[in-house]
Length: 540
Image (tube, rainbow, N blue to C red; front, side, top):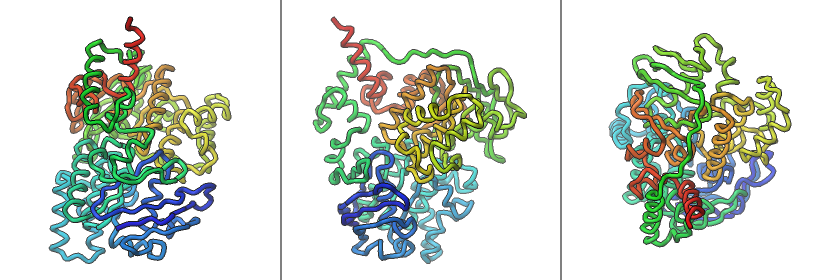
């Protein structure tokens, strides 16, 4: 189906190859997980299959990629597209219409399918991905996760022999992710269709991917083969495997999960040792918030408070109102009813530009925020506009180091990987030292190592007095970072409380460890390891 022969590729102006001497084979029916740190070349590997590399991007290219024995280097991308479907990151930027049905049907029309075939395939994909409730809504009035589901439907409707997915679950809720991977697995078994998935959320892939490709930070191939053989070669792992490693248990031994369950149960019985909230005064609040598009209310009488020194997570299914809530709190979403209060005063009538330095906001897809010629210049511009008085060079260099961006300080931001762009946008907001920080899906494109760094940074900011609100689908991240969690359902406040108990109350939101033990705490591998160390130190 697919073969890479000593592929080495460097982007125009690049100092080092994005991919270096990659050789591997992919068989029909494989569901291949492409994994590695942010910037390791995962997206580049996909674009070399659909011909965007080298036909669109240019650069220096050596080696060969063959699809059904045909070289992608010698075949125009439009010809490759007859056999290869692609779902990109930031799908909204590539929509060709405003209608869900038109978007799904577009590729079929281009391929010359008959009206009957077109109707049948569109109906089938709408049903399989549960899009019935979205077909009459304009695409620009949907959440990021809903847009992602439409983009996936448009690619899958054509039934491509080879499907390329770049971070396909980055904005999907758990139910949507499970439905997608179940379908991909079925397609592989039933028709021999092949899928390559570049993904950081390993918990979504374990047990589903048949094979895995692990790239190192220099774009080199570390391991490729059966997924179960590749996972142990990686320095980070899915949540359960990570917990097994932290307690020195063999992740390949099926009996290890039972021993881990017992160990975690003993910790839970010994008493909770989780984080203690040190909340202060309420910095940002919404009272009776109602907002939406036309007759589609996205928020329905929602009350929320973000206190000094705390991190609060907002969870909910796609379309539940998470993004609308954050946009309303920063003044970007007009309210039908209610009020937003910042530091005791309503924000009505205050320009968003005046609030931006005090209420920092990083949207789901932050590329629109990036315009400077280098990462460091991006931060220096924000710093100059804020009038903060912090030393430009020292403040910028320190923050870039904390976010793991020091080695790309001189790079053009839009040439970075999605996870790196996400961190640059976050840095550009943080450099102004906002009193309140609103983050919409901040872990998009971030590998587990970068996520841990982000958790540490947000805890540090909260300790310094920041009030932080994070909208996310990543329950493992929420459990690690937040003291409190809000659950939204269909625009309404469905639940609120301490993160561990709130996640546990809803089985669909439980972390991997909570599912394993049947207990709210410990909820994450990091938490379990810290509790174990503290428990053993205090034991006689």
